Every structure is written in structure tokens, then in C-alpha cells.
Length: 437
Image 1 (cartoon, rainbow, N blue to C red):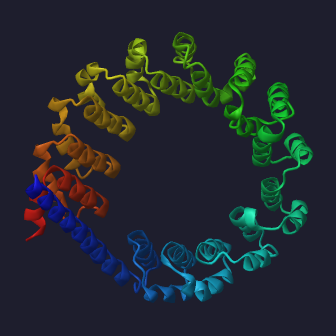
Image 2 (cartoon, rainbow, N blue to C red):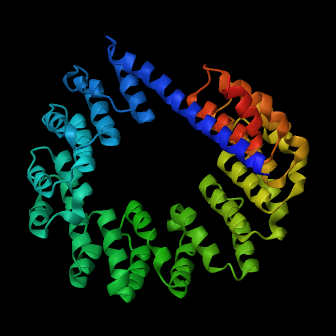
């Protein structure tokens, strides 16, 4: 056992070294791209450096780049990897003629040096986009007297964000009730309702009942407000749901409301199953998806037959959710159709099938992990999933493929890294043999 631990530690160190070499290799390639005469190539270079987390002062020359996209990417790069030492460059980018560059520079400024006084100055910026972003970033740090004037700003987007900042700072229930009833901004109403759950829960329950039956509020306003419904007591939710499901005008909101119904009826599975079954044939895919996910939440064996029928649904998200729910229910009948699922045109369904093979430990289907991870035309995320599940399943026949992937420089870095850690888990000895060369 001691020898195994020593072997694993050595292999792990080699994988870490492999990762470091991979980052260095990629970083050099990306740095070379910064001198390209083509903006798209320079953009690829700076974005690659950001992705690898590699800092280089050489990139700062891009602050003078002729392409706004490159200058914007530089600001994002500094945000992710820079320090306060780069603030002079950020200040330069904050004066850029393009608002898109200035917004990214503002994000970087807040990340490396969120100085309140500097942010207060930017609240007076002539660009409404900048004023909005300052409010988004620093609402909790701005004094109310700085926010108050922006409630009357001539730009709608600024007023909307100023309301959000005001709500975050106030504890006046009267002001919050007024906002909930009168504001034209759905997100502000949602924020006010969430705060009122603490101060005036009875008001919130009454408000929902009136809002749902009123034509005064748009569908979007109702949709946003309904996301706060889950925070009410169960009996209040039940009352509002009965009202909602009796009103066909609210059908567009059923995908949000169905999970709530399941949540408050987890102790009455028969009631929930009867309710969900009625929505499996709904015309709208989002309603069917909510119903299938509801069955997954219940995890009742009696729903297996209903879920199997959804494997033929016309919508890919419903099919994928059905596969996932059946796997969670440990339905081994999936093995009979897993081959067809892996041929589905939808990546979502194929990935759900791979996860099902792993969850159900369908040993006879493990070869699909290797087949899919080696298929370069397959979706990258699915290949990574196959690599990870091959390690999780301790599938030794994946070792040679993992070694090949690690040594193939044409493979995406994400896939090579996943292969390295999967191989470490499967065979430290194979890692040592491969990386010691």
C-alpha cells in the first residue's frame, strides 16, 4: 500500500508538471499571436493568455491597438490576471472612444482597485451605460445621496438600475410597497417583494393574488415576480398555485410554477404524479420538460413507464431529462435502448445516455466511453464526459486511448487535461511511464 501511495504521488506530480508545460506551451503560442497584423489573430492571442491565466506586460501594448475588440479583450485580460499596477492602463482604457471598451475597463477597475471615490466620479459619466454599470457593480457601497438623483435620470436603463440600488439600501417598508405596486421595472419589483417578505409577508401574498388576476401587469412582469413565489410559506404558495392553474391566461408561466407544485407536494407523491401526468402531453415543450423534471424530483418507481414514453418526445431537452430521470430511478431497461440514445442527433441526449451508462454501471456499454472519447468530430463536452466517466467506472480498456489523447498536440487542451487526470485515476503507473519519457 505504501508503494502504491508513493507511485500515485509521483504520478500526480508528473500530471501537475504536464499541466504546467501545457500552459507554458500554449502561452508562448498565444504571445506570438499578439504581433500579428490581423486583429482577429491578436484577439485570439490575448483571449488565449486570459484563458491560461498567464500574465505578461508585453500585452499592455494592445491598449493602443486600432481594433476596439482587441482593446476590450485587453481590459478583460487585466481584470482576470492583472493587479493594481495596471491601473494606469485601465484609466487609459476608461477614456476610450468606444463604450464597449470602457465598460470592460470599468469591470477591470472594480476587480483590481474598487476605490469608492473613483466610482462616485463615474456615476456622473456622460455615458448611460457607464452609469448603469457603476450602479450594478457597487450598489451596496454607494451612499444613498449619490443614488437618489439617478432615480430621475433621463435614461430608462439608469433609472431601472438606480431603483435596484435604492432597494438594496432601504429598509422602509412603505417605500418598498410603493415600488412593488407602481414601478415600471420588473426586476425592481422582484427585489422589493423579496425584501418585503421580511417586513410585510402578508402584503406579498395579497399582492400575488391581485397581480395574477389583473391585466395591469404584462406577462414579463408577472414572470419575473413569480420567481419570488417560492420564498412564501407552503400554504400561501398552494393557494396562489390553485389560482394560477385555474387561469389559462397564465399558461406561459406554468414551466416556472410546476416545480413549485411538486416541491410542496413531495409528501403526497400520488397527488403530484396525477398533476404531472396531465402535463406530459402539453403542446409546449417547456411544460413537458417541467413535468418530466418533476417526476425526476419525486423519484417514484411508479413513474417509470410514463418516463420511458418521453424517450420518444419530439423535443431534445425532454428526451434528455427523461433519460436522466430514468437513470436516477435505476431503470436498467435503459440498457436496451442506450445504443439508440447514443445515436440521437442531440448532444444533450447523447450526454445523458453516457451519464446513464455510468450511473447504472452498464459494464457491457463501457466501450462507448472509449469510442466517443476517440471521435474527434464529437462534441468536446461529450468527449470530456466520456473521459471522466471512464475513470469513474475504472474502465481499464480506456488507458491506451487516454495515453494517445495526452500525447496528441492536435487535441484541445481541455480534452488533454481531462485525459491526464483520468489516466492518473486509472493507472498512476501508466502516467509515470508516459510522462517520465
